[in-house]
Length: 554
Image (cartoon, rainbow, N blue to C red; front, side, top):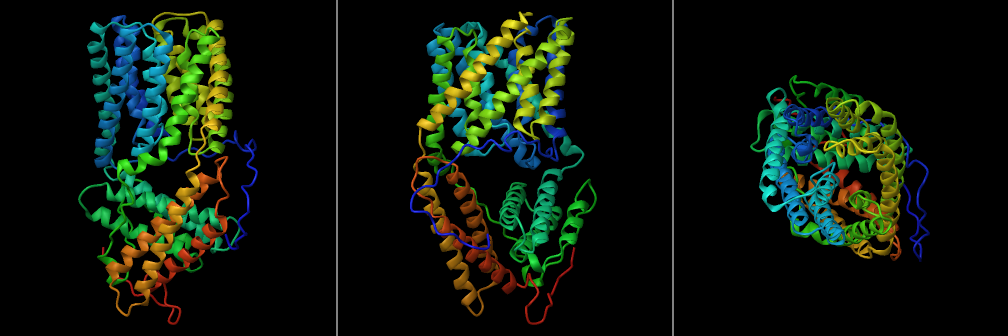
């Protein structure tokens, strides 16, 4: 953003986007990891049940196996703990659902329990930043279990099946550590380098430079969070930290950075070869501090209150509407509503469109596959495995593409206990999808998020304070490199948070005008201060000499 526009006196009209909602993007770089992991986690339990003639228990083994979808972007030290919490969260939601199903047959009560569970799962997944697929898989399992015939005596056994397959999913997700123990943090560092190179290509002033800069700082922050969660520092981590510093320097002064060199470093991080040694000025080489921007869980829960209310209200109303229409599986409408809720109304609308389109196309795919799947239970299991793989292959390109595979997979899972009439299943799925999307979105519009503007003000204040702190250090004759490094990282984190907060608030309705001009000015002055701080540290060529003293020690 090279220029600032005056902030409007009243909130601008916000239109719901349609262009680009269904656009197919590039796949995730690690799309094959969750795809292969979920197949490896699902196949052995389901094939075992098939051999035993007890596919009716697959719902409970699937609950644990689906935990293999999580935490693939985390270093293995952090992944181990995160997956334990995912499995425990899955078991907790499943336990509540099974106990409720065994105690009451009231569909209204069960829908209410499902809606409250969905809201709790949404808030906890967002607050803990567990990452994709977020709360949707947890809600799918708990909501479906609410409407499965159940007695209290059966609950412990069913939970034991889920726990056993959850442990198997943990092993599947941790297995790659034996081959490439530093793979996740190497990928995160490479992502930061490539994002910085993309910004360097703009020279800091070219077309799309503001978006490229925001993406670059977000990638750098993600890389730091990855490195800080790896446990005790190692030689590999120190080398990766120096590369992330180089990415930060490129973002601070894109016109003075070599994009080709950054991309070469990123390419070298593929595989298991040695980490490139990026020299740093001797004064900075041993001051790789990083910045842990994580706030306490309770601090992150507060801003999520509107999302929790939207989820609980939308899921409950969607389930009730499905009951009124006489649909036999109201949990489909509930899960559809739960899947919509994103950071703001604009993103929620986009997800609603994607969900409806993907589910409708998915129902058509099911119609084509159903005759094949009905040839036998073995074919049914293989079809489910194929769709679970396809869902993870496609969902990173666009959510609706992933839904094209998720929908027939969900329909086939309902047939594990016995084949059903395809026409009835398809009709109920389409009706519940439309009802869930419509009612869920209306609930999101009804529950306003008027605190979004307040959070922008707080983010502005934090960014201004971080910039002023760095400026004061720059004015001192000898501030110390450790203090400068900490101030530079703190300012970078504050600017990332400001941009994310402003983008989220811009997609909300029914709020006062946002201080867009102040946000732009704060970003401009903040990035100038970042460049000045990096130059004072010796991370950039001096304007007078054009030289930089490096320590190229490995």
